[in-house]
Image (cartoon, rainbow, N blue to C red; front, side):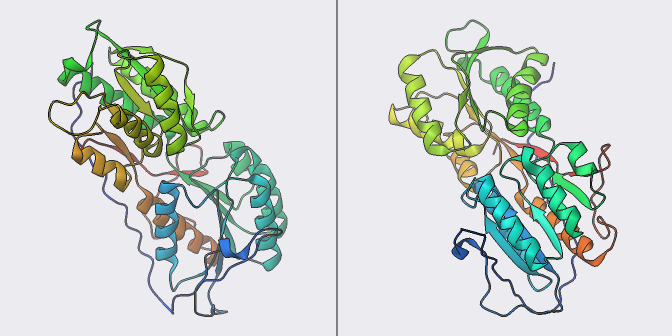
Length: 354
């Protein structure tokens, strides 16, 4: 059985994109959507720079904000960036894709709203001959492999769940007081991002199965809470769970830090997880290692998270996009490697306990 995990922080991957030219970007207004959503520069774009069309599932996702900021920074002065906010609506993103293709972008970087809709993106990109790098939200391998100018850049979602499971085991071994009723079983509640999202499903499944494989007995207190990665929804759900299961919840597991923070807010409202000496505490575990979550861990109101490296992700997407635009090998000049699917690059997770 695995013991308490050593704290680990993954080294941020560095990708050597040489700087040239001046910073510039332009916006492409999606059909029936506001051009205000696009990322634009005050300077005119140079015709000599390749144009990278970036489709984001929604701008106000905290982790994705880190990725897109890193992506823009890595491409500054090297490419004209046209970026659109899909606002978590696949129809909107489809329209934005059509506009980008009609404008003749050199390469597409796509963070799908609905990964199951990726076949439509592939069909249109292939017809236009535009190389496409999907990132973060993973389409089926068969869909990516159907186009010889497509690749996926992301994580292995199961790894995040397994790391959460190891964290659970470590916390219970080193803090026996967390077993409130002394029955040797962890009574937990689970907050899942989306009902059909493969990454959310994997994190949910493997966090529990890994803990059980470690010898930690687990028991779900109530049905899995589907909260769409959202802090406010998670807070309301947690408030309801606390009211219905007073004194029965011993652990909170969340697919991302946003939902974990919502749970902490609900707990603090009833005097739990305040960081004050002697205050009652229920361990809360998330994924992403956002700045807000790292701060809560430092304050003692949250137990742990799993680092999903947004900077490394953004840098990887930028490097691959530039190689695609120039016709070079997609991974040239990077430390990236294809996994055994032959069409995907994985950015590693790492546990974070403060």
